[in-house]
Amino acid sequence: MCSHCDYSTSNKLQLDRHLRKHTGEKPYKCDQCDYSAAQKISLDFHIASKHTGENPHMCGKCGYSTYLKSNLKNHMRTHMEVKPYKCDQCDFSSAHKCSLDKHLATHTGEKPYMCGECGYRAAQKSQLSRHMRIHTGEKPYKCDQCNYSAALKHTLRQHLANHTGDKPYMCGECGYRTARKSHLSKHMRTHTGQKPYKCDQCDYSAALKNTLNQHLAKHTGEKPYMCGECGYRTAKKSHLSRHMRIHTGQKPYKCDQCDYSAADKSTLGQHLMKHTGEKPYMCGECGYRAARKSRLTKHMRTHTREKTLKN
Image 1 (cartoon, rainbow, N blue to C red):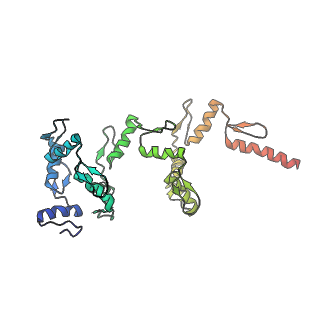
Image 2: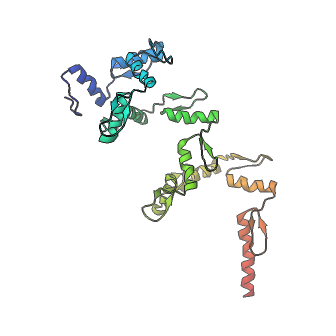
Image 3: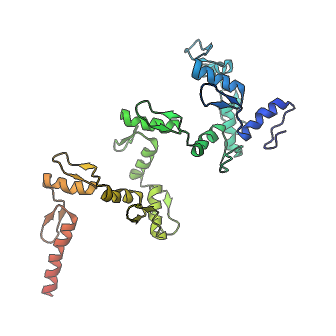
């Protein structure tokens, strides 16, 4: 019987294989790369699929081929729509037993896979494998167009959109498009007005978690971001990034009508008004218009002084 969970068997070999799920031991090493496996059959599958390309079992319907006969058997269910594995607690059914096992964990809350570094627990072995990359720094997913690499496959897909310009997620309200589903979810809150992130110290709420974090700094006075050049501290990472341009001289915002460049986007916006002649700030007293809010503020003092003198 397993000392970590309820699994039991009379076969010592099977118990040894099972225990590797808990210990993370992978004694079977690939002699062509850094891959290692807990079971020999997994190593054989790896070598065939990654190095030799040997896939003797082929589907007659779609041409899918695999090294393992059991994989082909599972694959054939996608054509027959057979889902023999039924959940005994809800209507869920699956073509594969492993999918049912993953589903059952949602009912039991069981998380048998534990990280030996930090105690993180997961319901699925694959989740633990992904988590371990935080500790190892491993980034197996490589971009074929630049030097970028990622720990997660979906992070690489998001990066590839930078090269292709692909933005598959679109807002049905205003046509906004984005490469990431999470960005669309955040954007939708501008239409719904939803602000799920609540401050526990006042009535403030925010649409984005990082906006709430910035707000919380007002209560704590915390300024975790510090300039290594001069000791300037700020509550916002974006403020530190802007500040650093004072030291680096970087001016990433370029005018498309002349050689002017600016360290801040707002400064470039003010400059562009010289080309357009736009003066969006207007005095309600006399109709004076200005390109900058600061100039309107200064102008308003002339009216304040006039009223003081009359009185």
